[in-house]
Amino acid sequence: MKSAINIGFLGMGTVGTGAYRTLADNRPAIEARVGATLNVKKIAVAHPDLPRAVAIDRGVLTGDPYEVINDPDIDIVVELIGGVEPVKTYIRQAFAKGKHVVSANKELLAKHGVEVLTEASERHLDFYFEGAVAGGIPIIRPLISSLSGNRIDRIEGIVNGTTNYILTRMALEKREFAKVLADAQKLGYAEADPTSDVDGWDAAYKMCILAAIAMQADVDVEAVHPEGISRITERDFDYAGELGYSIKLLALAKRSNDRLEIRVSPTLLPESHPLAHVDDVFNAILVNGSSVGNVMFYGRGAGSMPTGSSVVGDIVEVARNICAGSSASAPKLCFAPTAVVPVAETVSRYYLRLQVGDRPRCLSNIAGALGDHDVSIGRVSQHEMADGLAELVLITHPCPDADLRRSLWAIEAADPDNAVKSVIRVEG
Ligand code: HSE
Image (cartoon, rainbow, N blue to C red):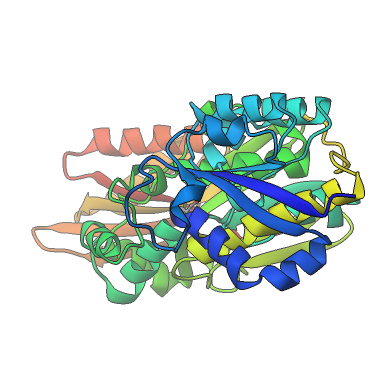
């Protein structure tokens, strides 16, 4: 049995620093749990001579990733660079050298996870990635192991901390999106380039990974059309609050016969919904299992130490497997290529905020245009505005997205005063 496990890091940014600190802070307990010492032998970074957030011996740092990948003494490669290439190549080269890999790379997993997992399994190597979804929240391993007796038909969650922080601040402070985003960037809660978070791609990657693990569905992430949060306004928060709803960026995957409905969109959730009060940078995932019913996982979905916690949990698991000679013994995942239901076919209730000319028949004309396209109104209220205009706020009964869009085109075409200001899905 091995008495020392050697680890090599590729990348030492925010998450790497959290993992390194966690290992350093809790070393005796961690090594006791593994039954061997854990030695960080090499760390490849872009700029080895720059000052670092954590004290690391300069001799351990290198600018060359191949000093990690090709080092015959390194047992586990921890990939924390992110993105698809050259990372996918590095991981495959590490596998070819017989190394187990831990990664927190959601984009790689969402786009090429099945390929990478298959290669690891064929080579009898471990590939663990708890940190790729929802930072510090344990969700991958519970889905693979604890809940494996269940058929899972639905997962929904708030899996992006940046957008949840922005929406929470907008709701509480009644401030516009651009200003809250600028503040979030100053505070370090949003990236300098926030596109992937704000436009919903980060959440889409994470939901594709969850769907793959929970539903064995190999989906094409490009077939998911996430909707971001940049068009939500303070008025929407006012009306949603009056109606008893929160607005969240909801990521959802649910089986629809042999296809998968998988979407990411701003969503009104009733105050009684378990996800409605998941606020600030927190994430939560609600899993519905056939035997267990609803289970909710809640915690910090991003950040150095929380995500570092998940990465170290994976390192411990892989190291234990090495010591026990049981690598690649994780339950088998059998993925089936699964089509994504086109957005036009998805059915939900919708919240609509419409500007109309405040004249006789305006309400009946709007109701008529919706009815002509089989869209039925559940709730409606009218709010007077300046200049002979009014704002109509409606919640529809469930309808296909395509029918709703057609009715909204008809409404805008019917009168120059008509304007569709907001269209937001309603769940729960
Ligand atoms: N940018 C992500 C978020 C964290 O805001 O949740 C890493 O996945």
